[in-house]
Amino acid sequence: MSKPSKMRQVRLSTTPTAEALADLRLGDIVYLDGLMYTAREGVYMRALEDKANIPMELPRDSAANFHCSPAASINADGSFTMGAVTATASFRFAKWIGEWMAKSGAKLIVGKGGMSSATYKEHFVPNGAIYLTTVGYGTGALLGRGVEKVEAVHWDEELGIAQAMWVLKCNNMGPFIVASDLEGNCLFEIENEKISANLDKVYEGTRPATLKRFGETDDRSDELIS
Amino acid sequence: MIALDKIQSTAEVLMDKAAIEIPDDYLTGLKHAASTEDGDLSSFVLQAMLDNYKAAKEDRRAMCGDTGCPRWYVKLGNDAVVEGGMVALETALRRATANATNGVPLRPNRVHPLWRTDHDNNVGIGAPEIEYGFEPAAAGEDKADWMDLITVHKGGLFGTDYRMLFPSDGIEGIKRFYLDSLVAFGKRGLACQPAIIGIGLGGSKDTCMVLGKRAACLRTVGNRNSDPRIAELEDEFKELGNSIGMGAMGFVGKNMVIDCNIEVGYCHTGGMQMSVHAFCLSSRRAVARIHGDGRVEYRTDPDWFTPYQRRETVAWEGFEMQPLEAAE
Image (tube, rainbow over all chains, first blue to last red; front, side):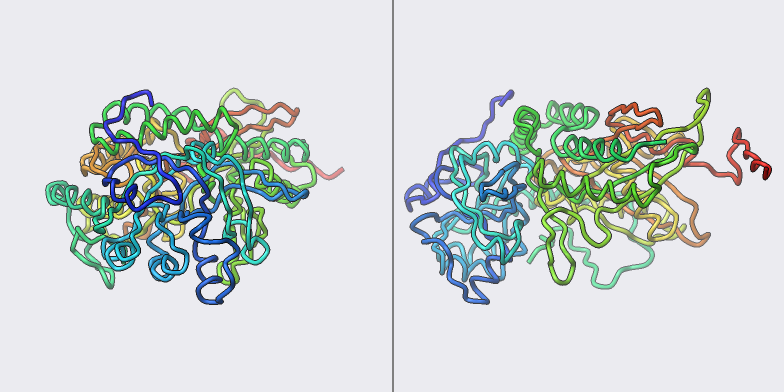
């Protein structure tokens, strides 16, 4: 960092202890060590709806689920080329996340943009899990450096490269930001609340569109996600 | 004649550059934003991004794991001739897209919308998009015997919107939709701000979207519209966006907009179409001019919106129609 950061930095295992999770605070910067697997709609549908056997021993091997499709390729000799790694927006996976955590024992959900506090309270809190968001969200090269190697790729033939289950060996991989805690508080909602307080002032001198669109809301503090 | 193998090899280099090298104009804009940002979380994010651009170049690794949806803009000089014709050109660009997807590597983002078929190479029905423009010889240029090849890898999910406004909505209505769009894009940072914002005004719904997207992706930071009154609006809208109080990732901050570019097109007399497009923290674009004699010049400024592209009149002044050769 060229400018010293005020944020607290923490190294965390991808099979974290309950104490390590309890120690995390919203806004902490986290670097991960251990195995992390990618799973998003393709894996969730295959494992939860089609009831396919998960090709890993979870959560023994990893309790960290990354909402990610890497920029990677599988070479003709079966080896992998891993380039940049970034997360995809997690709110879209709310419908599967509770069942997935119960089945996989995941304690860390790593993705883009967090989920709602309602999702945290309903699914994360009972499972003792927290949410880590990627930074930016474009720090793909930094995260790529944190992947020591690709341990395995599962379901690439069934789901394609983007939706496959990539098992990544992480070494000081980061940065990530703690976006939820064990009580289900949501960093993004806290920040949104502060910003919303200023919006009426910014909107002064503007006018609503003459022609409304069906389903529009005037509630500017709306989270927009369910 | 522009050689086909030159087109494909240049296109492959452009794919690599767009994914890996942050354009200088945007980098300068983001560094300025980082120096003015005082939100703790927002500052951390911007510093991490600056580190990331360096890591990408050092490792020759894509900046972002979501490498977007590759597309091509081809601008042909009026005297350019392509070896094998335009079908060969399109094949070369599709081949370069597929090769670079596996070579860089990029993420094979493109799938069939219904069957989710993934060719693992970013090529499929309508993908990559290839759009065209034409350009007369510049003043002092004997012949426009060249082709500008531009690739843009914009993200494919968040950060665009359209609204039909009317003349009675006025500037106040334009501002309202602009703010609505930025706040919606910006919550939790899903559209990856601070970014270059493009606004399209006028045209019809489809051309309005095209204008706004091109304003975001084909103009550089610091560049201004040639209409001085639109240029003023661009300055005003940049400031307005940065007064929302939102920064990177939707955290409290003061940097949403690295620059705001507006492009206009003539529209129906009763309407005032508006589109808003946010490019992203990786602003992936790369450009090369391939000359008929085989020279290739790389740059990062697409220089798309020339006076010719914004022309208002029937004929292009200074351009003389060449008479057809008499039959022998």
